[in-house]
Length: 322
Image (cartoon, rainbow, N blue to C red; front, top):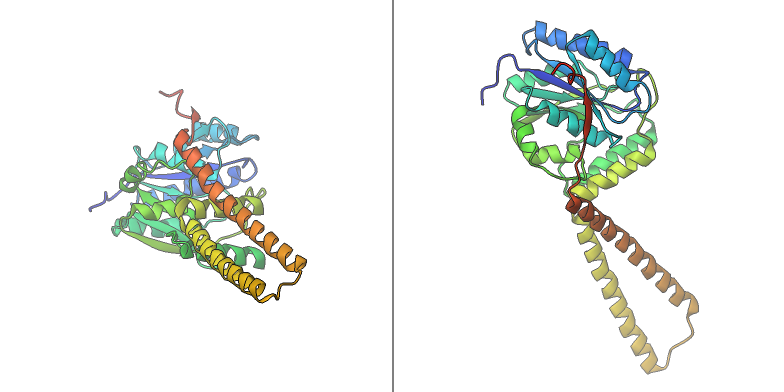
């Protein structure tokens, strides 16, 4: 498919309580837009779209001031905080009818914005999706590096198609976004959903830096919740593992019953309170774990059947102009 020589690019940036870092990174994004436009890689009509995810600080006020200062800045605000994945989706869906390509990136300055040059270049070479992939995790602690890499390996082992060391820094064409809009899941895990759309794709490696300002809004608890959401949203393998484990336990139990009957017939039975209690506790624990996993899937089904909106945009910086 032939791509436009100067595509309109929208950089989609989710923001949650980013009043400290936004004034620093916003000019950097503008500078990148101007550089790419000057090189003829993108259209001068390209824009930077901030998505305020129900921030409680002055983030939205800063976004509105940026929009007034330069037409390249745009902003939308969600009616309440709905999470990072929903904020990214809101920005992508808002931009898909206004541009030829989007690049989603966090506003904290950790992802190298210079990787956008190679992303746009790959788009011109015919790729519809370009994944930003971390070249190393040298800046991470051992624990974070180990858990993150284990998470990607676990997802792939569970049958979910994800790009190793890729988060939500990616280029997507309007053609891909049009098809992606047909995915109606309420439980979002974008880095696992985008590969399902298909189309020609590639990866661009980049170095990840420390935050330029402010504190991370993704503590360990949120990362673990995202990991569990990713597994249960993209794969039914945990259910199958439970089934297999249940068959194994049932087989062992059946063998134990036969052994007990034989011992009773031979008159070799003895009191075994400790062993009986251990077996009961083990089986009970396994049952509770299995019920918990099954309950997680049932809960997701419950949320999907409600079909609630995944985001609600309450304000736009360009409302007054219209």
